[in-house]
Image 1 (tube, rainbow, N blue to C red):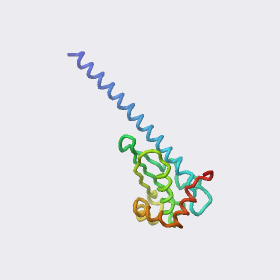
Image 2 (spheres, rainbow, N blue to C red):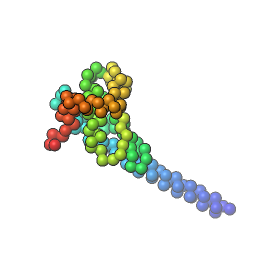
Image 3 (tube, one colour):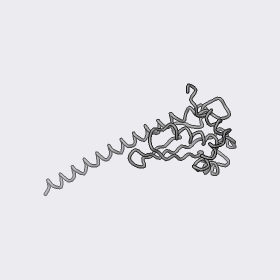
Image 4 (cartoon, rainbow, N blue to C red):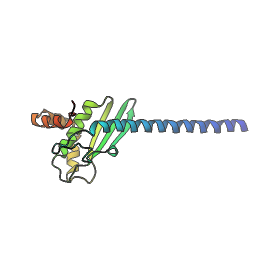
Length: 158
């Protein structure tokens, strides 16, 4: 009887070890995906200034979170920080993030973009706008907005 209990104990320890390794692998894969996403958005140019969102600290590696939804499907959450609490272009920055990620990510994903809590005077309203697919599509039908977005998301060597 002692050997059965010992075997069960060893098996449980082995399974726990495997579970820990899987969790570490999944965590590492999510970190890699987050870096891949960040690499796409960091070069978006600010609509008003000559710098990129990365250079202005509007986005950073910490602003990207990736969660696994299913096999080869991910939830991407981006929290960006406008340069000032009353930034009139925060919605446009959110639109640029949406457009560039939809175009450039090679894997299936759901995208949620938010203004970091407490960093903008109308963050709730803007969060609703930039996560509403119909509003995003309508905005991109406007030729003036589309031109601005294109100039922000196009890579310098494109």
